[in-house]
Image 1 (cartoon, rainbow, N blue to C red):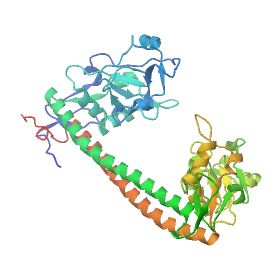
Image 2 (image 1 turned 135 degrees about the vertical axis):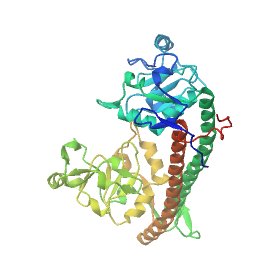
Image 3 (image 1 turned 90 degrees about the horizontal axis):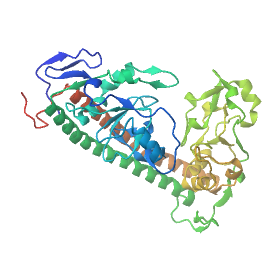
Image 4 (image 1 turned 90 degrees about the vertical axis):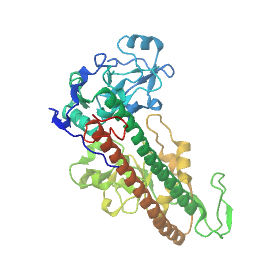
Amino acid sequence: MSFPRYPKYKESGVEWLGQVPEHWEVLALKRIVSIPITDGPHETPQFIDEGIPFVSAEAVSSGRIDFSKVRACISVEDNARYSLKYSPKLHDIFMVKSGATTGITAIVEGRTDFNIWSPLAVIRCGKDAVPHFVLSFMRSRNFLEGVTLNWSFGTQQNIGMGVIENLFCTQPPLPEQAAIADFLERETAKIDELISEQQQLIELLKEKRQAVISHAVTKGLNPDAPMKPSGIEWLGDVPKHWEVKRLKHISPFITVGVVVNPSSFVADEGLPFIYGGDIREGIIDWANSRRIDERSGEANSKTKLNAGDLLTVRVGAPGVTAVVPKECQDGNCASVMLIRQGEFNSQWLCYAMNTRVVRFQVEVVQYGAAQEQFNIAHAVNFWTPLPPRAEQEEITSFLDTETAKFDTLTSEAQKAIDLLQERRTALISAAVTGQIDVRKAANIKCP
């Protein structure tokens, strides 16, 4: 769908905004609000499990407040005290003013039985501003560029209250604001539905991919192979000629990476030094990893990497496993579980480690609330079905081909999502800055 431009434009006087329709105004946020822009309390309350939801930056995203991401609650007494400064009202707009998500906004919809913390600034629109139009403007590329240009940095990026109130916002005539807001709500809902369909497709592809892998590493590729009980209830039957072994009986050596102040071994140059954050399912991001010099690597020779070894995340995303590529040869690792290559196909074991067969066992033994993790003493006793080496090769070859198909389809779906999100952002930005004229599409009369 294409839209015309307005007949006449004028300079807005704002570098990051550019030209706007001639009949529009451009005003500082402080001139369109009904109360002075404020924020939440600058103190840490006593958090409780049940009480009044206390909303902070992590719950603000995509124009909405996600109450499932509220970190904690406050007492009725604390809420009453904080409400003397600010109490949420329908269609208030929150803007994150510090941290990694500075500039992200959300509008109050549906419920007002909560309070907010200091990282959120509050914009309550006056009678000449339509809240959903203002929200859309604050989500536009132009406004976010204005926020970025006015960031300051301490321990993290932030934007001051005095700066926020002087950021500019377009102000079309009130009926036009309402029409643009309604138009954007309708059109972005269509885009969001398409995005949701692609997201559902990705989830379905992930499930099918996992099912194919799980079946291959637990049942094999021959549907007519005789089966036998594995002796493990949750595993069920396995091919009759397979074994079922503990991990310590499959690999000749299993240990944990450098754990005593691993940062002391980090160098500016040298060999890859792999941490848990460098490992994704089947992939090690060695190119962007830390580095360890050869001398420090030799001093920690027990955890020196060989191509074909496996590394498993212990902390944060426990169980995620990848094979060490040749580029990491003689490198080292920190805190992760190192499974030394033995008389097995490394890629086959990697597939097995990343299935529910092993992940279930990880979940049984993992601990920790802030960061889930597991002990090596438990991991060495994990069970896995063990086919003959030749069959491991066949399974690996089959899964390499099949997973590549799923990965291609997933990549295509993600590209579609990226394009739809780009389209959504572009449409919002163009409409709220007047670069396109949506009045006819919004069914309002043009002057």
